[in-house]
Structure formats: C-alpha cells, structure tokens
Length: 483
Image (cartoon, rainbow, N blue to C red; front, side, top):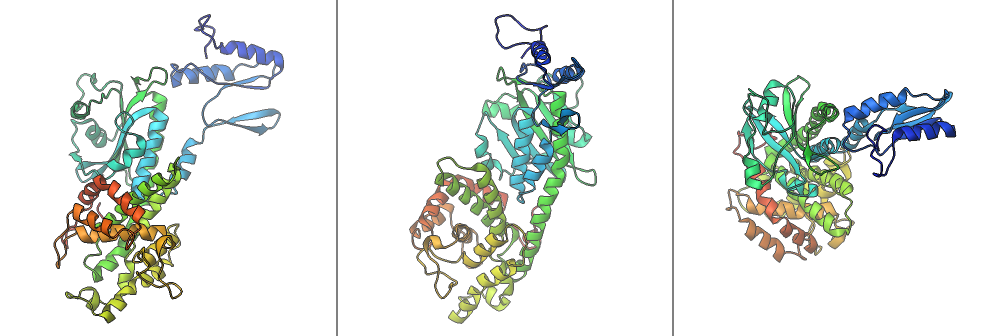
C-alpha cells in the first residue's frame, strides 16, 4: 500500500520494502506486489515497477508491481516470467462476435470507460461535415444497461473547430483536458455547457480521441468524460497511461465498424433485390422491423430472468436485429403481377404469395453465418399465428403457441406493427396508439400475449426508432442503407 517514505504509523497496511525483506529471508523466488495506494498515478507505478525489477537479493528474488492482465508461466532456470497484459486482444476477440453496429459501439464505449474509469462517454460518427451522435453512456444520469435507449438518437452537430469534438476531428489529434472550464490560454475551442445546464451534470475532465478509416480519414470521435478517482469518487484528470490505452482502442474502432458495415451492406444488397419487386420492402422498413424486434427481445429476455445474463442477451439481440431484417426476402421469388397488384388478391394469388415464406427460408439456407438458422426460422414462420391458424404448414400442420420459434413470434409483431403505422397507397398510416391497441386485441389469437405486453412496455422507444429510420421517396435512398 505504501513505501517507507510515505507510510504513516497507525494507518494499517504496510510498506513494500518490508515485503521485499521478508520474501528474501524466506527464499522466495518471485514476488508480485498488489494493493497499491489508489492515489498513485500510472507513471508513479511504472517508476516503482522499474525500481522493483532491479532489486535482486541473494541472487534469487525477482520483484514486480502486479497489474491487471499480468500472467506468470514456467520459463527456464527462473521459475516464472512476466508477460504483458492482453486486454486488447481479448476485447477484439469479444467484439468480433457482434455484427450489429449498435452492439459494437456499446462494447467499444464500455471498454473505453473501463480502462479510463470514465463516468460517461459518447461516440460520434462523421457524416459529411457533421458529427452524428451515435452512442452514449452516463453512469450519473442513467444505468449503463439502459443506454440502448439512446442508440436511436438523430442529433448531429456541424464539425467546427470551436467545439472540442469538432477540433479533434479537424485537427486529427486528441485532446486531454484536465478541466474543461480551465482551458489552455488561446485555445481555439471552447466547452459547450448547455448539456450540463440542462441535466444538472457537471463535466470536469475530458479525453477526446479521433479514429480513422483505412484511408486515414477521420471516421468518428471517441469522447470520454470525468475519470473518477476510485478513492474519493470525484472526477480527476485522465492520466497519460489512460490516454495511451484509449488510443490503442480507438485505433481498432474503425476496423470493427467497417466489419459491421460490410455485414450491413450485404444485407442491404439482398434487400435491394426484394425492393425491385416489392416497393414496400425497403431498407428503412427492414431497419425498423429489425430495431423493434431487437428491443422487444431485450425487454422479453430481461423480464424472463431474475438475474439477467446481459452478455448473452446483448449477443442474441444483435443476432435478432439482423435476422429480422431479412424476414420477407422470399418475395424475390413472387411474381410482380401479384406483389404489385393494386386490388385484393384472389385465393389462388394469395396461395402463391404465401409461398414467399418457404422461398425465403430456402434462400437463407445458403447463408453460412451465425444468424443462418435464426433468419431461416424467422423467414419461414413469421406468418404463423399463436392460435395455429397461420402458415406455412409443417408436416401437414400449422404451428401454434410456443412451438412457433421465438424469433418468428417477435418479428410477427414487429412486421404487423410497421405495416399498420406506415402509409401505403391503399391506406393511411395508423397512430402508434391504434396499432398497439390492435396488437392487444389480437393477443392470444394472432400474437404471443406475453410479447404483446412487452411491446407495450417499449412504447417510448418506438417514436425514436421511426425517427431514426424514416421512409424516403424512391430515388432518395428509400432502397439503400443509411450512411
């Protein structure tokens, strides 16, 4: 906890020199010291570690300052050898599991806050000349497990040098500010206090880092706020070591986002094929169904378990969002004469239309990704009904109740809801209240009653999703992915 130079008698704990002496007397070969005084900076600990590793008593004692991620393993004549931390490698292996951009942003921001003890943080993405608010955490204002509610924000700000984030983006450099209200004299940027004034939050220290695409262009900004002193619980400056580790993480952000974008691009390529035949099977429609399905699943999963496994829920939510977007891909195999018929379908035409579920499942069977089975279930069964009167038949019998795969039950609700609240050439859009009321009336008949209740409980999220993914006229991106 202390050294002899700063130890205060009666405070308890001990000085590290005492342990070195005791270890030498006992014939210890390797000593790792833990429980360091929490006010020591990383630089002070690095200095201590340097001193420790140069202490050799009786030709046998090796001393180290223990740190998170340190490993020891047998090696030659000295029983143990120190290896560096592999936190970044382990983290990259973790986020490689996620294909949805929201899940990737959430995990990156959570790790950045963990390694810097940041109370809050935001990731901005560059779109044209703007910085777009993409994901946020703030432990003082809302629990991190509720941060997903802010994933559909559409706020943006111009990328100008007078803002801290804008300056970091344009200068392509990081800013490590100990106190945003005491900026360096002559700084070309200033702190915008409007958020603090509106919420009662108090921003003190701030670390702002750009991240870059493969061409060296700034693709976004990682902004971390208030590194919290573990002893006092008060904001303190971000250390040089924290900044270094955050830089390592920021360097990997773009590649993770590019991987996620490639996944989304492949999905949109498939959706564009469907949109050629069905004018309503657009990118925004698929995004809305995917987003509603994902949030509906999270609410259902968290209510189902007394102690929710949030890592598993987050991973499944990521899979359901993407799989749900492909629910109607089978319409590529249906004739335009049926898909674009302005009037009511005949019984024969409706029988052909029903075939899109099986066509979609057969198309998705060729997918080798981790969502293949889930996407097939959703495409095949999202027209099943809770009462067993849906389609298609399986072994000569329609599915009912919980025999219908969960993903399909969820997408049945999300798809019908979107059809109701979206305007069509043959009808006006329903209000969210009217659509939720219909779902409630059909609970136990068409829809899983428990999921209908969960849908009502995410009512406040629905306008945010529809604001984030609005319908666009043909020729203005209606069939493409939002950038």
